[in-house]
Length: 306
Ligand code: PSU
Ligand code: MN
Image 1: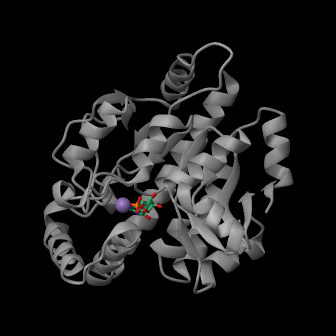
Image 2: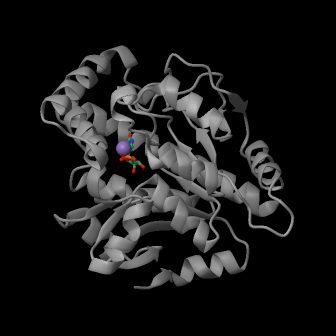
C-alpha cells in the first residue's frame, strides 16, 4: 500500500499554487462509458483552463492515488469490478489490492491528507428518505463535519430527504453556502423547496469564508471542518424537480422491494433514475459537474492568491 501524490500536484502544493480535487465514484459508478471518461477528462481540462491543477482521487491496485495518469483514469472508467469506497472501505481496498472509486467522504479524506483544500463533485450524500426506519445517513455528512475541505456540489439529489440533510448539516456545524442564490439547489434542479442557510456571491468571498472557518481551529492544531458549497445547475440545463419526482418514488419503491440496503442504496437509486430518464439526466449531470469544476477552480485560485 502506498500514498502517491502525482508530481504535478505535489509541485503545485509545494509552491502554494491552486489545486482542485475530483472524486472517482462519479466516473466508475455515476455515468456510463464512454461519457464517464470524456467527462473526467473534460473536468481536468476545465480546472486547468481556470488556472488550477486537477487531482482526481482513487485507489489503484490498493494504492491511494491523488492525481491519476491517463491510463489509471481509463482503468476506472472501463473496468467492471471497481469498488465503491467510502472512508471506512479505503483500508480494505489496500489490504485486498483492489481498484476503488472514492465517494465524497473518501475523496475529502485523501485530499486533506495531501493538503488539498478545494474539491469539485456532482452531488453530496445525505440523509436518506425513510431514515426513521433505516438510519441511513451518508458518511459524507460526518466527513464534512471533520475534514478541512470545501466541497463544491450542485446540492443534494432528491433521492435524499433534503430537509433532514440540511438539519443534520446544521447539527454538525457544517456551513452550507449557496452560490449566487438564496435557495438550496437539488442537483438536476435549481430549487429544492428549501432556503439556503447562507449565500455568497464571489469566489473571493468564499475563499475568505474558508480562511475564517479554518481560523477557528485551536492554535497549534490541524485545521478542522469542511464546507459545503452548493452551486445550482445552469438554468438552461435544469430538469424541474416535479418532472423527476415520480421517477425517484418508483426507484425508492423498487429498492425497498428488492431489499437494497447500506452502501448499495445510493448507486441503486442513481442507476434507476438514470435508466428511466435516459439521456436527459446524463446531460444535466455532465453540465452541472462541469459548472462545479469551474467554480472550484475559481475558489482555489482566490484561496491561493490571499
Ligand atoms: N449523489 C449523487 N451522485 C453521486 C453520489 C451521490 O447525486 O455520484 C455518490 C457520491 O460519491 C457520494 C456517494 O459521496 O454517492 C454517497 O454514497 P452513500 O450514500 O452510500 O454515502
Ligand atoms: Mn448509506
